[in-house]
Amino acid sequence: MTPEKLEEYYDGILDWAIKTIPLLVLAVFIIFVGFFIVKKLMKLINIALNKAGLDLEITQFLSSLISGVLKVLVVLIAAAVAGVKMTALVGLLAAAGFAVGMALQGFLGNFASGLTILFFKPYRINDWVKVSDHFGQVKSIQIFNTTLETPNDKTLIIPNGQVTDNIITNFSTKGNIRLELNVTMPYAESFPKVERVIKEALAQSKYILSEPTAHIGIESYDSHNIILAVRPYINPDDYWVATFEVYGKIKQSFNQHGIKAAYSEGVELGPIGD
Image (cartoon, rainbow, N blue to C red; front, side, top):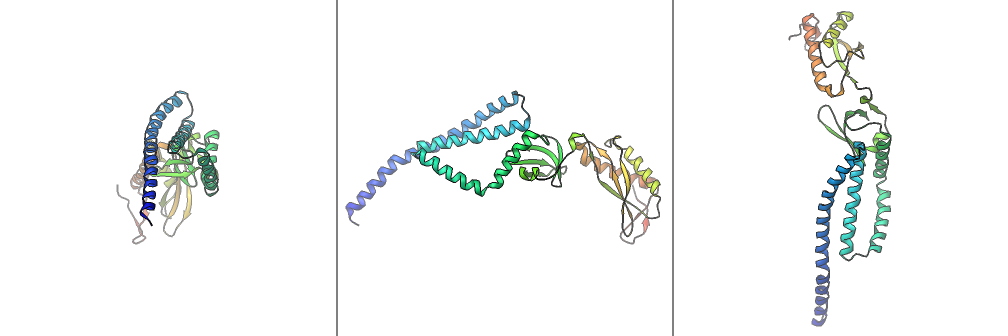
């Protein structure tokens, strides 16, 4: 390659750099400043949405949607400043959108399911629900997913498509949930006596609701014990504290009334301590 040709390539690259690099720097600056402005603007928009008296679920959805649209506009403006032809960019986005749409049908389904949840409202923020065998309190309803917080402080992020494709149990519509507890009694013990003792233990707990009344019955038999089902009703927010207290009250009542239990070590009946 001749020196003249090298000099020509060098001059071409230099000219391209002089014209393009400032535009790229400006585009990056526009994105940085634009996203900052969008962040500040979204705070004002959220205040306006909250003052409009809309449901919290719809407010969160609109906030996420508006934020996404504004950020896309910022990127388009930055691309135009960088010298990208808008017609080519729009065509590229359309083609990419089609390809991504085909590849991400699940996301689009979650989006449609999110709209269904927002407008038909099978549950709201702070409701206690059971979805796909997962129980928890609704913390947020986003465009693509719903976030639940379980009673043991686990955060579950469930795609909205799975929510609408399954049976949704909303415990907050009635204002109470039923605990599903199990205790054991020896075969030689009297069930009416044990039932009465458990009812007395439930009556001592401040978390157990008087209505609906608790259900107590024999659930099954194992090799050493009779398995009893104890089904009292509580307020959803008291789930764990009620569970722990009820088990403690029942154990205490068994001890006071001399009800024995089978120990796995020797399958012998022995007293229950305090």
